[in-house]
Length: 314
Length: 126
Image (cartoon, rainbow over all chains, first blue to last red; front, side):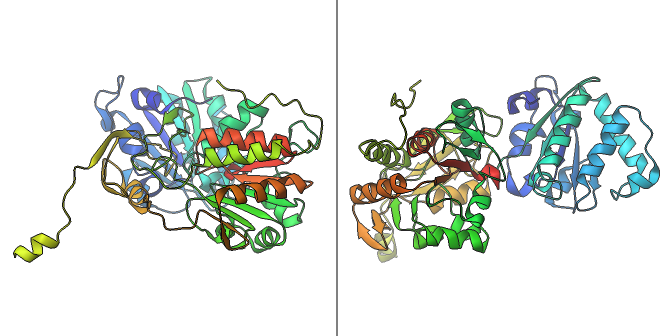
């Protein structure tokens, strides 16, 4: 259950940020959408809203929060589960609550506030989804938001970084019905994170060529993964000669999306935005180069009898 | 005094783009005003500290070769041909990244993954 940031701006009177530091990572999130803006149903802006920050340390964002809850590192799943129990009115022992680094009173107070809200939002960041428990934490956060809808309107939204990573999810979802980690080696899509996710593939050495578009795994990935990128042919499309370009067989310089290349990018709430590039680059765009690679591959014999109808144009 | 003013760059009329979109983070703010000359963005109104750095960091100068094959300069068409050959020859090619690019390029990447029978994955899996 999610919504657009416009709805948050106009309706949300109770906002939780969990495992994220928007003050430093999404600097305009507070001022454009969530906290300080006056909304249609929140005429007094910040005064009409309550903000809770849940994190393992007091970040810059804590200054903007009404309530800061310091969860013990790696205890997010326990805290979410206790909150779910309290929402349903079940008894939770003080010891179980203490394990999260918070008191039962603090957790009960949070639940009371969540239930009393007119429109609550839970924004969760990588501090929740990339720590112990990983996708189970995200699932618990989504279920908590869903269950709160028995009492009030409550939604959850991931705090996406990395420009148009939301767009990648959307494009793959509307094409394959899966958002990432998709294998087409049998000619139809199969989704299995852990098997078809990049780090796992590279570390195991499963794939025998890589095309990198709009990323620099050579600078960020673990050593065994980078070694596999060096061992097998790697192709990089990037506006700069990156770490990955230096270990790649092929590098193609492209223009920068939104600065010198036009197109569309999705906001974290899955609202598509047109790009308005002010500069004219001497390099082709990612789109133009990708179209050329597709055309060059299409001239070669098909590995499997596929129907060549082309990408659907909408 | 006169020498100092003479060496100052002549202020050409800057290209102004209103409601430009910033793709640095997931906020994708679309209310940025950009002032640009022929090669670089010189002013960013309403952008945050990250957005300003993003816009000013990228220019339209020719700083890198068009393409590289095994570290040697090549044309885009040669590099495209080499890329197609590597991907076509592979049994299980991987297409990865898709973050700092447009949806239009992502759609081509999806089509390419289908054509070569590979795996496609984004930053989401990290």
